[in-house]
Image (tube, helix red, strand yellow):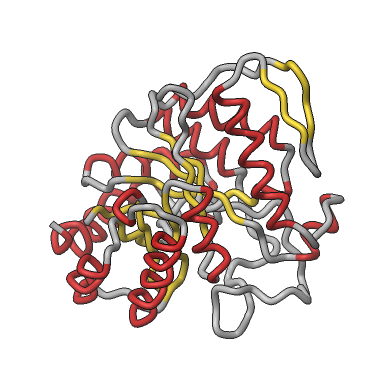
Length: 289
């Protein structure tokens, strides 16, 4: 089982010198992938319930620095040469799909094919309102945007006509490096997210999942694969635990997890990062091998 690291873009992890230090240390210690999440907007008193905590509140303060994930990963790509990169996740329905297709393919080219686009539908109605995007229908919008983006990644010129986006005879380059195919990972813990991971994506990213709940979530994923005629082993299965300890690793591997994502807050200075990364590697990577 691979081990990824979700530590960039927020708080201390939003400082360029810390990003560079975390990226290079993670690569040298054998982490498989760097993950970076997204919120364009946070509000002080949200009415929307955060779905990844028991109390329904996001742990990140509303006034924290939170960098754009594609720009952050581009910076990390320039500091590294082997470690993979993924958004975990980009809230796709909040964006213009033509722009995201261009940005994602650009990052894939600049990183020499190391990028995977993790996407989700979003949960904050306040964020959608601020961006002028309807909150209702965001699942359908996400599905359509992915179809439009794949058209842009493979066709030149490209045309698409849908409910939410349309274009005719346009050229958007560069294309992703691997034959116009950019890996897509669908994030979210709901049954709908698992269904979309099977029908739309190349993998699933479960976030802040209790270790005891992972087998049941993977069983739903396997059922969706059977329902839609897809082989389960075609999917990557990445999980960040809410209560992870190294002793959970054998059970996770047996249940079908292919990547454990360690969520960690980096230290405030780059000088402290090597020891921090080494300890994370001792805790998680060695037991996973």
